[in-house]
Image 1: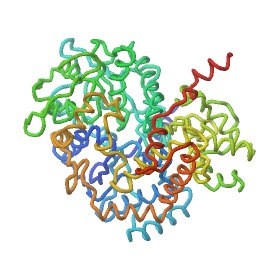
Image 2: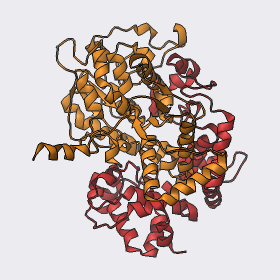
Image 3: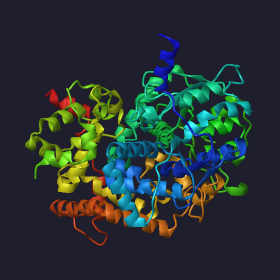
Image 4: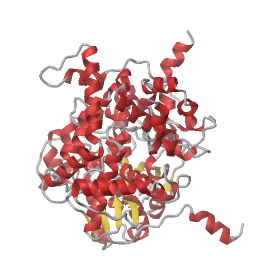
Length: 357
Length: 243
């Protein structure tokens, strides 16, 4: 194939990501489980990269978990999303930066719906005007927060203090990456690399010195399944799907799992603990579990941020094996401290097994 | 009421079902089909047949509640269908008509409405730290329990603005913004959906022997949140199919 033809083919797998002036919308799940990641994202963008990113305190949930567990109707979520766009329009921004993958998928679904069904767009404009008096423009660029970190991965690499190299062996750390289903399975052209070659996390890992591990169930869902986790009696679905992934990745001995979705890192972190409790099986080469990180946590470690500023103490599966391999110094006595070092007690047990801190 | 016609009015249905040749790729990729006695191929086949009786059976069935809406089927369908979107249309209609209370899995909608649904309207979040009660979330482990018991300090430590004014993670959503979300629910049918879930659930709760009590059928909510008859997954289905 001629070079021009190849360039044309691969265009479908590339994505335009705005390079500055973002309107930030947060994730419900991440605020609960990984608030340090959102904080780190803003810190990297503002302090390391000198970017303008604005958050309006009046923005709310997109209601996506309610929509995908079918208690929130489509018209309702469309109008809530339209309200977020109105806040962005009023603030003078055109580039949306989305923390959540569920939201990111919903923004994509709704914008595509409006393109295909213009009457629907008019209906929602009327709903929003009637309910709030607001008007909105559709964003010019919608990027997931991981797209933005991907875009600036080399800038981060240029500032790195701890590359993804095992300091004991000198070899690249082996990282398994897990892309949230709603990142590009629904609308492949909205993700870096599409659904077939999602490169958003691969790019980060390779730029920061690590090695990406391929394994058979790499693209399998983590098992959130919305209602399949939300309702207690359905959670067998959730843990079973994560377990399928752990079993599949185990022979490749990954040093860490990297995620770009809010729920996936929480589930893959906690289900390792649950599987240990249920079956006595502990994953990970050293029997301490496989650390599960968000991309901001990993970027923060590479940049030399304090692991407890990043929020690694909020994980059940310990991240210390990874910190040790990267050669990162940390004060274990401050892991479970509150603000300003205040002692607030420790969890009864940490890690996957019986490893007492 | 013609059920197929009602489904056709849902944009998700129009987008989700173009023309299914029943190849089964969706079932092959489906995480729900691995765990539950479930097949998106069968669902697409039934709705495409326009057989009103079978569609009504679907709307009252367990099977439409097995999908996890991961939308892995969207990527793989060679005909551009999305069984996950068909499911969303079926679930909406099932709630509209009250059929969801006919299945154990469908009845769970009340528990979701009373947790996630009400959080959205009254708090501006789908989930909040105070809803992660350790007894209801044992999977969050001892670290989850530690976070729950020390939430203000833990969240402060990582830079969140828990219950605070202004921007930041877990900030208190200003009342005027919650008022706007409330009006959006009023105008767009959000509260109609909530009311239908409540209405049909209460009728079902009474027929199952639960009473309103002092706390609005909370025994029924606990029941639907925790009950699993053990007959949903593939393992059960295949072991009994051999008998």
